[in-house]
Image (cartoon, rainbow, N blue to C red; front, top):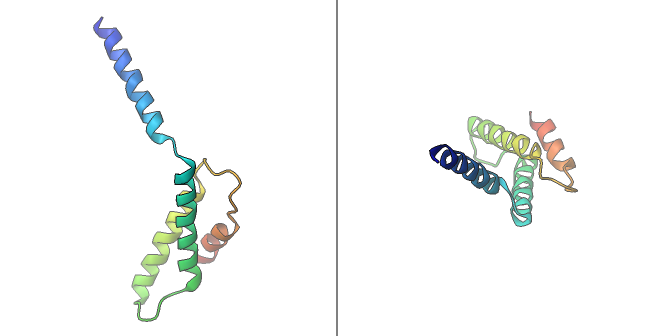
Length: 91
């Protein structure tokens, strides 16, 4: 009986993890919008008054964010051309 309970709990935990990994269409849209914000920031260039090292750090964080996001497997027909260009231009 104890073994069955352990197996059930393991299955239940795995199912909960799978459910928590699911993403809604709204979340996908929000993530795509956030990627657009990073692209815009990178394309606008260093803001006046920002220190060079701060800008370098900002670029690095945003490129990393875009690289992580573009690699997600839930994208369907979203246009990633601007995202890929921003990554390539700022690597």
